[in-house]
Image (tube, rainbow, N blue to C red):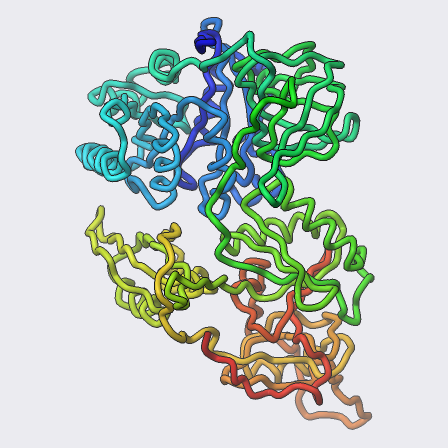
Length: 627
């Protein structure tokens, strides 16, 4: 039966590099389409509903919304822009028919722009280009820079194999923060200065006129591919997907189709208990979902992303959703520190394994393996931030556990040679810092691929660097550029092993006994390096309390009190003031630790410790300096 077009729906996503304004643009669309009443108070970045997303200012998981424009329902999907969450983008692109590509008017296309655009073009999606942040000072001083960015995007389309039709994309110029856009380049100055009032109607018109309506087969048996999972305390497991053919109703018996490890089709039957469809940001219960809809189905307990819901077991399920393979793995284990169980739930290995497996079910970009011991497990992912988000989520669930240093997953090529993942890093920084930054990356086996002069005194460097060379380099890069540098990277592929490279040069300052630290003791300890803890912190033997000035580790007594006597002193000792404490965030700890160290994660604290706590059982000489 020939496919039909359902003209009352458009399924699309907003794709871009991180911090180019995707979520802010969706905010404007939701407001201007009448989703919120004029008197209703709405927070910024309303689509970033996760607490961690609002704290970090980035989108972590893809989320849905729906708006009505001229009788057409637009199903919008907001996707992450950070490379570590690329798996979210890859699976979402299969559920939509087109995309709005957002590009910063000054920064232009960056690595994640290339990644998301490449995936969209491969699927044959029609693209609308939206140049955002045209109100930036650099653009007002040099408006012609926008044309340079458009040329870069066009070259990217051609390089990625876009068809002639895809390369003929409409262009809009926008200021998502002020919620306006225009197709006329000459209107930008007047809109920026407020001399002319604008809105997002030109973007809505482009979506309706340019992006295709979904192709459906309404009379065929139900066929629905799942691209997301959710959970409700009231109805249990929820499966989010797009219906390609047929329809589904409440209480209908349908089949879940999937593939086992041998590639054979497996099926199970279940009854649909509830159906939901998005209206605005809310899920509204409905009696039926039809072909072309993006909706939610409840009733199936054992379901995975990529499964197919079908009206008949004879329907051929969709192929498994494939994403870029993980390049890093991190060890998770139970908390064996002396403080275990004091600040949260000290989970046993069985519960920790179940929690990690549950995460892998809802995030197909993650992988899981059993570790070398029964209480250790490997979680595979794409980057340090992806691990940090999961760790922080588990902490907020009240769990206690420990994690090790991320390590790169090597492979062997057809000739049996060792190969490793290599990334293309793009650095945007002030020119005076280029020498120090270039040297830093060269120490990590980085090779300069291009050097481009940007706006003002800024330059853009592109380097090819092994993934293991990026571990721990982001914080050093921000320090070297005084916080003014921008950093992004994308997996380039696998290349022959680049050889050993230096990792952390400095050793650690380790507590040699338990107790509470004192000002008197820390005053002398800080002469040996940089402290991570304050006075009055409870420590234990083997806990890392600072970074040593030298290459080797040192064991110190940070709890030594000052001895009191009844002898009078000519001068008062005064108040002990420590020189400074380096507050280590979770991300900094992940970058900093070495292979013989753990990060102890509890709901209240992040601690660093040696894997071997007893001082007489470990050496202070660091022999594993190269990786």
